[in-house]
Image (tube, rainbow, N blue to C red; front, top):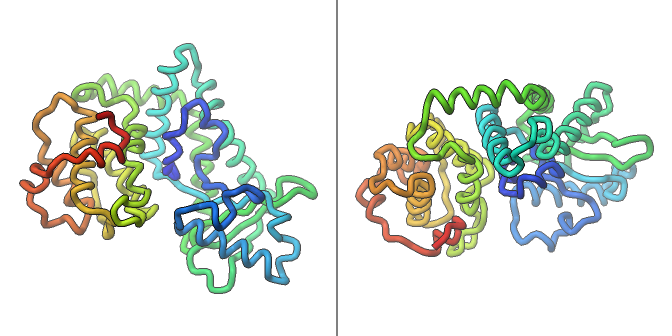
Length: 327
């Protein structure tokens, strides 16, 4: 999740156990690595094909050809507060579906592959089996690491941003495993907070899940401009801010770096903010002032917009369809 990539939260909850929630994974030999398969060109996909081309053609890569590689994974970090919120929301959803389940059942069925993948990475790093491969000549975005899944086994390659440090990921993944191992404490804290601070109507259920479901279209192509609406980084920002806004009863989150570029018309964005509010508070007829403040602070381009324009924007069925809302 996104997160990354918390974004996989929209998958059926009882199938999440087969995903690593902290990596976008491209398996060699599957359609996902074929250049003509993906219709959307993201930063990751473009980097993936630069790396594959280099691995196929460079003489120094004889031992690391695609045929000797199992998968290429772009690693993710989800901010700790957001990750904790996602875990708590997933736990609520899981308990509603499997009412007799234990916390151990939840962790195993929702995070099984995530945990095994992270443990394997940490073990390889501790044993010195994680090697740095750099990247193709002139690569400015990603750098690559590699480890083998066993003797004479194909390698697994990991991509992180060049301006980041693999140690940040290692330390963060240790924290994730510790959090899941001590899930009882996190869940009990959530229950205490729910009792102490009741929210208006029933929005305590699945906040992160609903936000990511209804705002998912922001990471896709605008139906009018045919370009990705928000970059991956900006999408993650918007999701985190929005979850915080509703968890803290309309308190505008701290926004130090607003989103600079939005590749869609502002009518779609205005309506998305208003429609999402109605998802959580269908009986409210007046929008809180802080919703408009949040909107103008989140997007640099909208900083001088008038509140009347935001309130009076005409309804559009197309936006409801993009947000996966009922008619």
